[in-house]
Image (cartoon, rainbow, N blue to C red; front, top):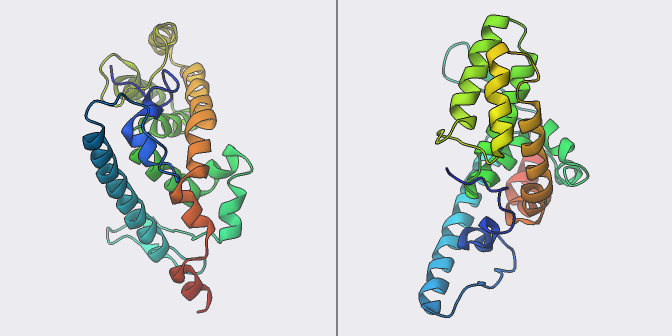
Length: 223
């Protein structure tokens, strides 16, 4: 099964991808064999990830504004983006819930998780939030099966890293669906994100860029 970024704490974070995400370009904790090739590969990965960050960040800043709305070309679909000020972005560091409650913050966090190859964690958490708000028993049952198939079962396309006992408990719970079917797994994933991904997000260049007044942001504020 594919290991989530929160599982087996420390291992995945020691990978080249994790190291590439650090400001200080932390040093590779690996053997000396092929060290030059590893350093070159690490450099390439870091440049690729930073470029991806810049592209995403530029897209967010250019397509969001505190006073303007963006409307999808598709009929009936309207999407509004609000660009946070650096001060607002800084509030996200006060609590993980502050970040998740902000639509822009959530989008930025998802982009960061995608760069860490563990976007399934936030997607699962969001699916659970939607699941708990569902009132129709029929829809609840369908959503429970989809969540199980997408995130829980062995070799699921977005399999999250939870223990075997929790998986078995969920398999039993969805036989008679209730709003608490995925509660234990959701708490586990929330804790992994809060204690692992969230601190790294706050230390990342991605977040630091949001806290700075960029030329784009300054130009928007002056209009």
